[in-house]
Every structure is written in structure tokens, then in C-alpha cells.
Length: 141
Image (cartoon, rainbow, N blue to C red; front, side):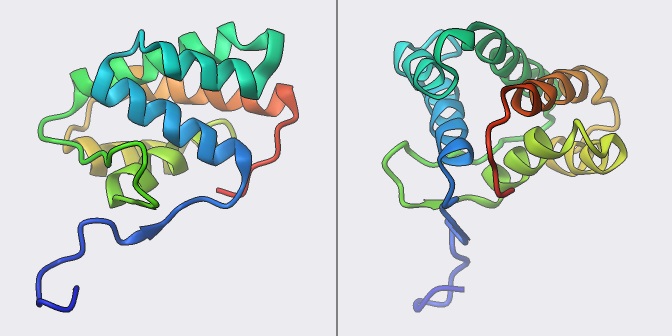
């Protein structure tokens, strides 16, 4: 709750580590400007260097499959916002956790999308998570 008694729209703190923050900004750009957003591409290039194509395509696939699976709106904050929505926090937990705990990621996806059929975004998230592991990028999610 905020001071006026309403629910806080941005209850979650911004991630501290570079990897998670960059993925958050890229997914925000894709959510608002489309999956082919040039700034999202630059963010992934900066994070993954010459190996950016596979994680970029997988993040695009995840975003598309997430939008198809969702039965309601998913709240995404503007890029410059210094905090996160609960939905963004769930998305990051899914992306960074699916490679290690598929069942937990599936439960989070079902909660986020209000849809029990989440196989497509779940598989994209799992492969994206393996890309992060293969790139040996640190994350704190």
C-alpha cells in the first residue's frame, strides 16, 4: 500500500546485478516496442557480446509465447522506471529459474498467465536459462 491507501504499482526493487537488470530492460523494450526493438537488440549485444543472437532470439520467442499464453494483462513498467512490477519480478524468476527448476517455473507461469497450458513459454524460458548458464553470466534472481 502507498501513502494514499492504494496498492503500490511498483512494489519490487530493481535488480542489482547487471545480467538481470539488462534482461529486464530488454524485455521491457520488447513488451512496449515489439520483439524486434533495436534497443533490446543492443542491450543483448552488450551483455552477450558476439554470442548475443541465440539469447536474443530465445527472449523474443519467450515474449511472443508469453503473450499468446496469457489470458489477461501482464503489467510492465516503462524502461526508465527504477522499480519493478510484480509481473516483471515473476518473469525474471521464470527466465532465470526455468533451467534449474522447471516445475517451479511452470507454476509461476501458470500464476502469471492464468492459463494451465504454458508449455511453449516454459520451454523458451528453460532454453534461455541454459544460455545464461552457458555464457557464465552472474545473476542474483
